[in-house]
Image (cartoon, rainbow, N blue to C red; front, side):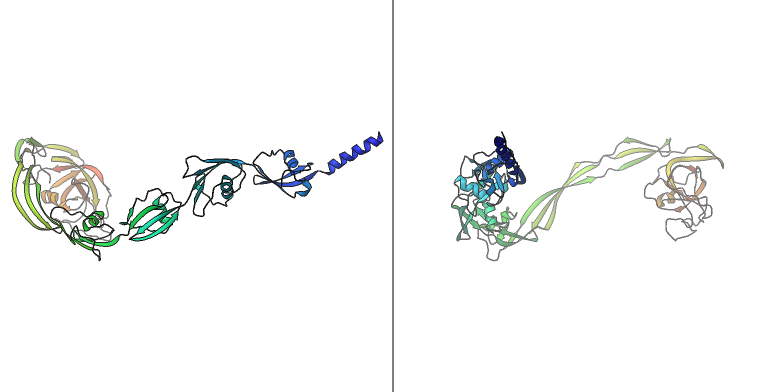
Length: 456
């Protein structure tokens, strides 16, 4: 038994002493494998990494682990290669790390000017491809394009999707007015024939201004149209419309037009104002509403080079005659009374208004002081101001404002927000600020001479 046990114990001890740590990179991820395996493949299997057909193992799976300093496993993944010249993609399972290796395995030759994208994004042939997932490589082989530029032949090679992209990549910087045939959106094909006509700079004098532009058109008329200028009716150009473009690029356009204008004119209606002593002042009764009339005048206008040179009136036609407005205005004065701290006061008119206040040194002008008024009175409590047209009508008459008292119209002022406004006077010693307060103004009897009840 001793003779049997000693070799077994030796094997167990030897197996335990064979355990080692091996650095590995699995699909680009570094890790460490702890294993008793004797080969690279055994070490990968012991760590749970299966090796399938198409996977790349470095060194080979059968290599003795004692001869491997590091293990690398690149799993194969499905790669679809789309060639724009083919209808069906090429599919292959590969562990290749670059597009160049994939193309080599697919039997394709990748030229230096060919276009290559990975999942829609540009990728270089030697850039590292991602690990462990399906991917799509789109491949557009470069083709030769034959160019004729202003009569000179040349060629370019490009894998761009359209003619416009190919020209840009080849350094052609086209500008407005250049002519390219076929169009810039044309797909590239082998030996595609392209004509490019470089635009000539133009200086177009038209409508009193100078228009700078470019054109490669064969005639003056076509060049003008490309730059938004059209010859109409009896317009002329120099050189002529059918002539080729001038060497110096200067084109003069002369406009000649005659137009008949129908100009409308509003005829304001008149107001026929009649007095009515049965209505109180400030009352109005419109018995016939006014309507504006309308007249049309025909005018012949002549233009040369966009400038009016003559205007001749043909005739005027009354399209709609005006209708006068008939209104009755009350002349009967009110005979009402208001109880006030000064006693009962008779008034002939009351209105809603906005009240502000002023004093000799508070007249809205900083640093300005004055006691004078438009009527010659001194600014103090009891002197009020209206706008000029009301002052002219009510000068030296009396008004009553609740909270202020009786005031004599003795000054003028300015208030931009309402015609119905009164400025209440104070001396500087007893000044009371009113701000802009809504008040009622009672116009105390008797009314001024000539007052009809109509406020300006």
